[in-house]
Image 1: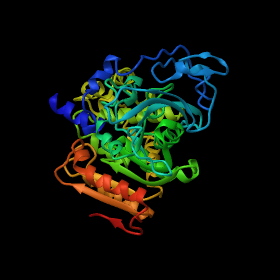
Image 2 (image 1 turned 135 degrees about the horizontal axis):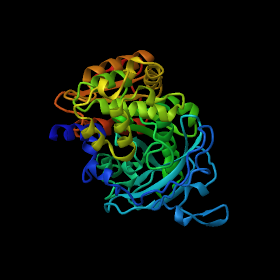
Image 3 (image 1 turned 60 degrees about the horizontal axis):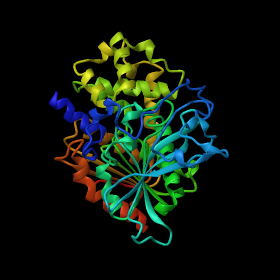
Image 4 (image 1 turned 30 degrees about the vertical axis):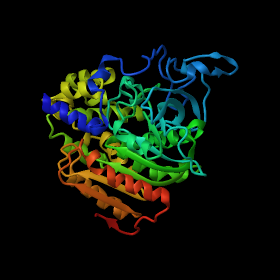
Length: 430
């Protein structure tokens, strides 16, 4: 069991998790409030906000009027909005050298529907120097925490306890936007591992951060993601020019990244609790595409674990999945069964699409995202064109790679904001 918990902390947030163990999420006390849902979600092509009663305190909704009426913490009272539009913000208690706000903003879901997304914005002290164009902005995507709203990083108590490994960038002078992703912390289901909506949530978090005046963020943005967030960061870079032309995205960095989703899920199945990741992927892609019907390929055990995934955090799901296999959870292997196999493959295609300069950071001892799988994925990224810089850390695992790579990440991010040209036409492996 101890080995299983260690591996969980690696995939979920690795060194980013400091004070709050993931198990705390399952107790339903991981955030400022526990939301109350009182209506079913509408059809996927409609806006979720007006039709879904969803109360969310602690994000500043109580301080804003809605359509001239009294303030409300019910997201159902909000009108549809533009991608990246900031709905509300509320300051949270943080270390003295960092300011932070919980935020709610608009994004677009898997069916291009309006979705309300929660997250965090962090900034240096108000009296720190501000460049003429505003503070440089990093938009961050976190690793796997689960699909239950209580597992969202913005709900963590104490605040920032689930993103501790990112704080160095704030202390270096950057504004940091942290998305909870679509449906994790906000209304609707979380389409976990669905790259397109994650990419949009990451870009729209940057837009929302720019609208938060006290943060004083500029239009220059670098995207960064860890594990699940690595998928989001590279996919976001690929769509940024079309989806968010108002942002100047200078690069995408990915640490221990989930790039080739089918290959990584195949690797994870060798872990004692690895089938949990495949179950999360199938559940997430079904949340994104109503045509996918997981119940058709789930066993009774699979349905029981799916119910747990919706009601607890990733830690409990991994523990409950220990000793289970693909054949005990599924009647047919999703990696070999349509339409699931094609849906999983499409997520890798989103990541492969060319974008701004890319940085990939990988641990040699990673048993979750294998170095050999990342090696092959980086080769594919290089073949797709553009600049790809790849660093490997032989003694780092899925969790310790963040500390091992932070100096290289910091230098690379600073170079992008400084306007230093990234290598082009080659795959650079220092």
